[in-house]
Length: 306
Image (cartoon, rainbow, N blue to C red; front, side):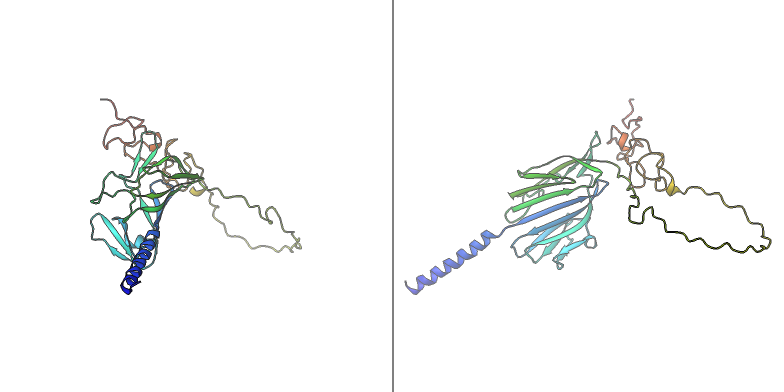
């Protein structure tokens, strides 16, 4: 074979090697929401693994660098010049980060039956037609989306706009798909007031055991000096921390700032009723949870008839 032909063949082989390496590059993504007991706040873990040399990741404008609880790799560039998003840039094939957040009013709605409805996408696309959870260039080769829930939250429904596999475990729901892009999710759930933790009784080896008592000899009585008059002992009253949960909302009396909460009302950690539409009727007994502010309502939270 002439030298020129051999050189051309070697170049073709090198090009094929490069193409094969690029073709084998895969992109996997993980999104994990750790939902907090109030149903609105969360910790979010995002991770992407691939063979690409760099990545850019968009964060909501409300997230600042000091709120990032974990970032890997530790070296990155931060750009907040875009009015819509903050951008992290990594010179690495993969990255992971964890940060706290709160669902916005656009994402989370309270329905009339008391259920919470979360939607990850507001229906808008960017200039490139991308929306939801997207990747460029190409697609996600593997994508995982997970919610981890506390004991007081019950998941009622879930769906995605892409075909995939849902796996439901105690306190967790996961979605897995391959070769996908532009993913959106809708979740429904109910929030109960968190239960007050109970202190278990002592069942250790020493429980109920009494050390033997050695009797002491009787002391020789001696005349006591005349005692000065002492003030009467104060009457002991139970502290607020020991008072019972009068309104049975799961918050002990000592920590309950709203001890007269109506039965059935959803409360926060301070024992005060949640009132989404601020009409004075707690969410747990409010049949119309989206009443406009300053609208006269009846005892069920619905607009009074004219």
